[in-house]
Structures are given as C-alpha cells and as structure tokens.
Length: 60
Image 1 (cartoon, rainbow, N blue to C red):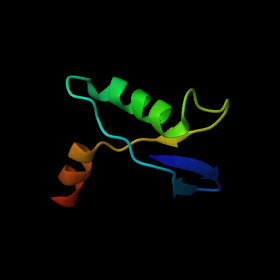
Image 2 (tube, rainbow, N blue to C red):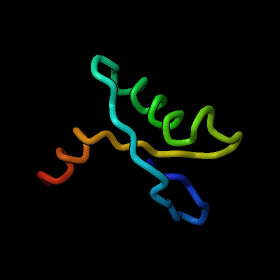
Image 3 (tube, one colour):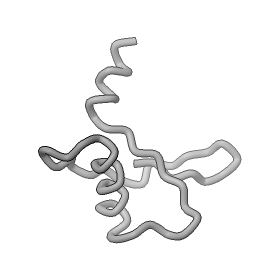
Image 4 (cartoon, rainbow, N blue to C red):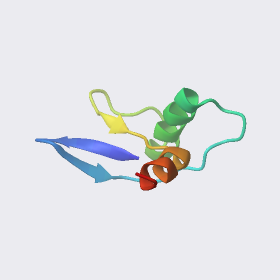
C-alpha cells in the first residue's frame, strides 16, 4: 500500500495479505484498514495494488 505525500510523491507504507473470497474493491479497503490499524486518517489518500495486478504489470 502506498500513501500520497503530495507533490506527486508516494511512499510505501505497508503490505497486507488478501483474504480468500474477497472481491478486489473490498480487498483494497481491507488492506488500508489492516495497514493503518483501523480506519485511515481523514484526508489521507492511499493506493493499493493487489499482487495479481502487480504480476500482470510485470508482463508489459
């Protein structure tokens, strides 16, 4: 998971395991909660890249 630092900069803030049977959108939301230890800070922007998407991106 990445957090937007502003000015086009992002920082890797953690990883979370995807739970079986959870659809992609819900998996992203759960990853944010897992990494932040609850609900994210108000106004914080995160990007979550699922491992399956990462593998697909490596094929390009």
